[in-house]
Length: 422
Ligand SMILES: Cc1cc2nc3c(=O)[nH]c(=O)nc-3n(C[C@H](O)[C@H](O)[C@H](O)COP(=O)(O)OP(=O)(O)OC[C@H]3O[C@@H](n4cnc5c(N)ncnc54)[C@H](O)[C@@H]3O)c2cc1C
Image (tube, rainbow, N blue to C red):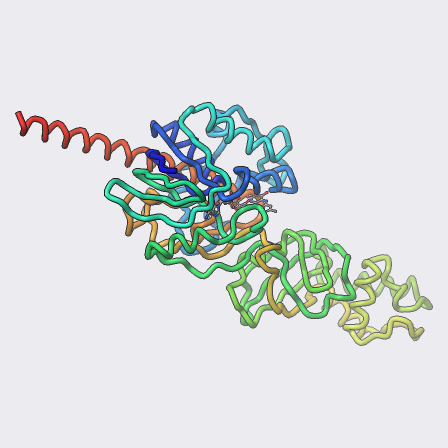
């Protein structure tokens, strides 16, 4: 079925929906939102554990990685409240600066965007419409999506990346871009668990830690928070953030955990000495249960070469020094990362060099990009959704402006043509 729209937005996720609303607000008369899933915005309701951490009070480019320069987008849209309040949705900020919908329910965010798009009366939604080709035409683009053939003056690629394909983003946006000769930096999973040797016996333990990522012996990133030990490695928000800074295919990566980040090495040693005094006669495995989780105590003892269940007089001073050192610097060799199904975002994507300041392709006029499809990814804490929304709003506004300029120049040409005839 052939249809004509001023603007086609491919991908009805966070970026695509914000883009459609913004384009309508900026005067674009007809917008098609095309999505391969049976409903738009399927990922939004599962974000932030069902609460949608949609932005942060501390928005800054320091929290982003990748080849795209986020600064101009963040400077133009440092605060999403005016946009969402204009759609009737309010927010609150928690003590860590994370911003959530006031309803504390992720689906509110999707509702705000969906209702905003509906209310404009300018947005047509096409679901179960997987876009398989974009071709340039005389007046813009011809897009094939499911049974539809959509002709449009401008298009926005907002298909997301490869993370969590079950919610829609399966990487097909990258193939569409490459088909148009646009370069894509190799995608790989980010904000995900890291695979590590030797965590099996700690499976299920959660511990408040300092966590530092070293690559080739150089410190890449330091985080603090709860680390979750799994059968195959390390997880938890602070590990997700370390994964965002770990280059793809890196072979020489080590995560060092500080198991007692509020205590200095000296404090830990003193504490161990005092435990040794107060619990003399106990088995080593019992001795440290007042400091560490039991599984961690066993793990540390084994690493320090102290038999947990052989009653000796007590660990000697050298043993305690070793234990204290391990407590502050417990190293795990990183052997890989979780795959896309377990990742929150995609690292890599449309190369920054392909995109101009208005988020339009430098090669193809009228083709814009928004959201995770771009080679930029943020840390946990609302940074990824903030960029998705902000880039969507910006791309929608820029596309509407381009279309209006195109229309004006078309009208002018028509008038000149008419005048010539007279
Ligand atoms: C479990 C989970 C929790 C998260 N929680 C948070 C959080 O709390 N805060 C935060 O900042 N970030 C969070 N993120 C990351 C955030 O959700 C994404 O970065 C953001 O949704 C990206 O928006 P997007 O619109 O670019 O892509 P997406 O939201 O992935 O949307 C892309 C859309 O394009 C459609 N599509 C793809 N290919 C095609 C095609 N060929 N044709 C037609 N349609 C297509 C998809 O169906 C999808 O609807 C989370 C991610 C996950 C997986």
